[in-house]
Amino acid sequence: MVVSKFFSVMLLAVLGLGGLGAADAAFAAGSTSDETGQAAPAPAKSTFKISTDKTVLFHDGTGFRLFINLTTPRPVTGADLDYTVLNKDFSVGSVGFSSPADYTYQWVIPLVPNRAGVIKIPAMPVGAAGDLATPKFEIKVKQAEGLRAKNFIKAQLRAQNPVKNQLAMYRVEVDNLPQVKITTYTPPQGEGVHFELFAERTVSRASAGNRFYKTTIREYKAIFRQEGKITINPPSISGYVITGNGQSQFTQGAKPVTVTVGPNPENLIVSDNLSISVKWNPAEENIHVGDPITRTVTYIATNNSLSQLPRVPVPDFNENDFDYYEDVTVETEQLMRDKKLKSTRVVKQVFVPLRNHTKFVANQSVVEWKNPNDGKVNSIVVLGANYEINGFSFSDYIPRDPKTAYKIFAGIIAGVVLILFLVYSVIMYRRRSGIYGWLHLRADYMGYWRNFARSWKKDDPIKCRAAILEWAQKRWPDKTIVGLTGLPFYSKAKTEIDNLSRACWSKDPEAAKWDGKKLYSLISKNKNYKKPKAKRGINPYGLNGEIYETVQQTLK
Image (cartoon, rainbow, N blue to C red; front, side, top):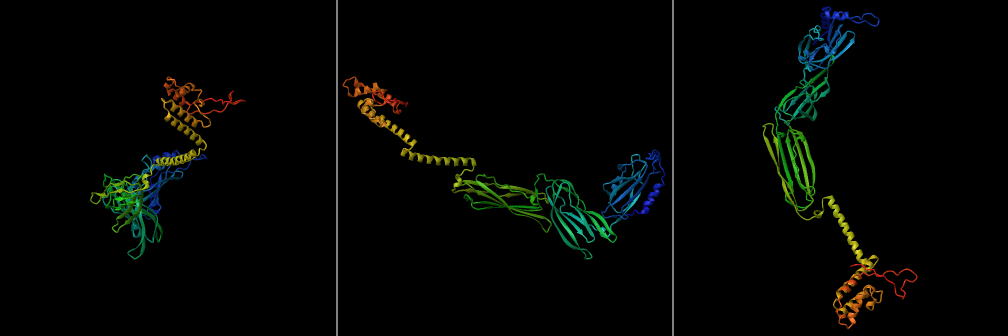
């Protein structure tokens, strides 16, 4: 387009012929005074000046700025100008508004033409009164030629009718000609579709005149995440073209794409082709502790990214019976000659048995996927395996629960300490050392008493007398016990002991009827008899020289 100085002057001349309207006269009559008391000069009428920042406009994606200057006695704000009529033939940017001087207002409107030719702009009203508006004017936009006519950026979506969860490759080519300098690149985007850059490379190409230039090729993975109509906002570039007259800025974008994404109610994996192979090792079903069980799972998919590949579930197993390890040995994405993405992943899973007499059971599973080309749902059966772990290992008897293991370990330590204590006690007991000597003596006393009890005959006074004397002589080895009257406890059981003596030596028939039950009961109270220490004093002995004793009896 050409909006020349002559055109601007003509616009002003036309606007100047309008004279002062009634509304302008009213505002001018009510104008305020300045600090000196003189009335501020007000314009006689409202006038517009319309211009652009470029003299020649092209339909090549480049933009320009439209300046609308208004001089009026009326107060004006930026929102008073209604420029919605420009949306029909232009892409409108963010509008600026300012008042550089009294009664002078300016709008700056960034515009990008949507077509070539003469574009007629109707009057644009200013204010709500309706009596003030811009004049009608025309803008001439030339069709781009030469470099300006060339599309420096192109894009292609390799899917016609995608479905939800499908991946499609999106290719963007940007030509870097010698006379063209690209300063900004904006990648594609869209609501409901996720773009991920897969690869970027630069190749050399030749034009029709055998002039070489570079082309940057970007391959994107586009994953459609929702169904319905989706519009892809195309990638765009901006920069400037170098010509003989200097530099000319431009902005270009690839053609927008609108697709209708089909439904996927089961939310299945969408793939042009999907295969899952499983290999189990070893082949034998009977193994031993420590022999690894290996499952190698290989995934190969067409038009799927690695993040879209399914995962075969890990078999259920007892963590106390098996150790589990997993390693991804292969993970690749490759763009094939037919421009389809091929993804490969190899996963190695290792199960190491820790106990014998257990079983490893991996049930088969099914993975479903959908082919977008025919809409069919396909199924893959992942084979399982069964193993029996047999043999002997000490680990079979080691508890896996730490609390149980601690208890068993503590029990073993306690048992060892007990055995050492018993061995030590036996040795010390035999040596009659320390407290063990005292215990040994108590045991001897009990042995003496058992022998006495076995020899006691309650109806035979002679044998009873012999048993009592034999037991007492062993029980009190430090005493000389010849007869029954020498027993330490004679005074406590005098009546019964004397009855025993008469039964042994008297010829009286009544004495022969002696019954030893009562005497045995009295003697039983003295089987643990202990000799006390002598009384303290000047004469610890009795008046007749015998040792003064008290008998301490302990009940049975």
